[in-house]
Amino acid sequence: MKKILTFLPFLLLGLSIQAQNIIRITDNDLQGNTTYNWTANNVYQLDGFVFLEEGGILNIEAGTFIQGIESPSTSDNASALIIARGAKINALGTADAPIVFTAEVDDINDPIDLTGNDRGFWGGLIILGYGQLANTTPETRVEGIPDGEARALFGGDNDADNSGILQYVSIRHGGAELSPGNEINGLTLGAVGNGTIIENIEVIANQDDGIEFFGGAVDLKYAAVSFCGDDHYDWDLGWRGNGQFWLALTGDDEGDNGGELDGAKPDDGAPASNPTIYNATFIGAGCGASAKNATGVLFRDGSAGMIANSIFTEYVFGVEVEDRASGTDSRQKMEAGELVLSNNVWWNFCNGNELNAGGDGLIRATNDAEDANAQFLIDHLTANNNVIQNPQLTIARVDNGTFNPLGEGLTTTDAAHIDNYPSDAFFTPVCFMGAFGQGTVWLQKWTALATYGILDPTLTFGVPTATADCSAITTSIAEIEIQAKGYALTQNSPNPTTTTTQIGFTLATKKNISLTIFDYTGKEITRLIDNAAYPAGLNTIELDVTDLANGIYFYTLSNEAIVLTKQLVVLK
Image 1: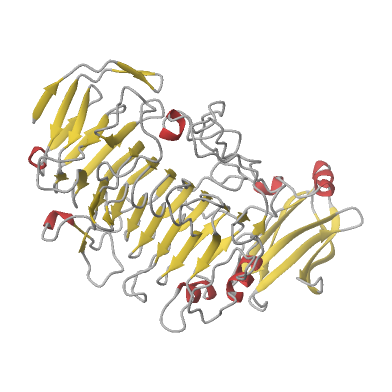
Image 2: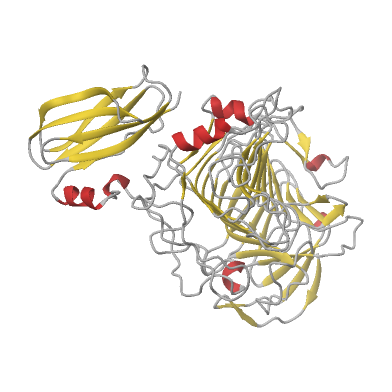
């Protein structure tokens, strides 16, 4: 290792950083089957493509800075850290002492010398694993790395593969162009398995995509991607992980889709992308911006998946679901119930805010669409309780300290209801839409959005806590008054439902009640309970929907003093 001794006393993020040594790291400095410890009293500079090879372990201490050299001394076109298959990175930052990957030109004594418009000064962080791919071959080479580099291969048959831990890591000003149109993502996850832990991750001002998944099943929680030159989130080649609490914030000068979401290569390949995402807030560049700013989410190439309880705003279009005249497309996945957009908020799109694919609509139809009016998508958004509603965010893209992504919190008093969370320990059930709620913002303290002066400094740091029962948040004054008397009707689970679903209701005292199912027009379909006595407390009943057609229904709990109604969606 080449050491250049220097003295860098500074105060950053409210912490005294005691970085005294700049240590140059080349590819020869990291080997396989060896453990390395990078500590916060050093600044590590990546010189060219640096691979941690199979069996190697890299432990990075909280508060450590890693810089990528813009013009490497090697023959490589950029500097990047690549964690090869079978190696592990353990980057354990904290909210008070994040681990920062940034450019050599970023003066770490000065937290505001670079901005969200400063992109492409180095490569990025690349993690490769042995997870499954939906690709023409079971393994492939990561984009951005020259041909013939065996250490750049990813893919295999182990979706539980473990590449380590990333926590409170900020990746800044990367995405160097290797050749025209060929850049490196801020964070590349190639076939990474769900034995890997990735949470509290920021990518800011990357010239290419922010975070891109290529296959595998890794999960991602608490992610902020802002001011990227291309798409903010991208998945492809069969990613099948979970995500929750994601932010995308597009700059007004560059940036394309909030999410470019691809399924497989070829399009009918397996296992196609099928992730589950809850609580995203995707904010485009706004109308009149020079950024391309195409769509909030674009589903292509047979991608399936679930996005729920999320907010999309400020793009030219809100959504496109690829619809081709032949072959496999994402429309087929949606019509089969494998692609679901549920209980999301859509607002302020440059093309228009109406639920159509016309001149004033938020939907972009595929150029050669079989359904040129995207009626399949209109029907789906309607049936799955998507709403066009102002989330009342305070959006800012400059360092004036006014960006506030909390908005009104969008609880069920604002939108019809919160979609039920999967029974997976990864998810934190909360009663708000979007990535932020409960009066706290998990971006505070550790992100560049905070230190660059973009985020409102008065916002309180905190992570969401689980809320046991969102049905306690009701949708009208009348329901609030009824609930105060000890009566409640809970949201059925699961919803949407395909076969059976559970409905719960609470009574203050033993009462005769009726529970009735209506269709969308108000026509009575069936009575599950017909003026029968039920005891005080929580009661549950199972509804079999196998004889019901796909669509929106309502169920009403009633007697002489109670009328409570919830929406039921049948999607087979």
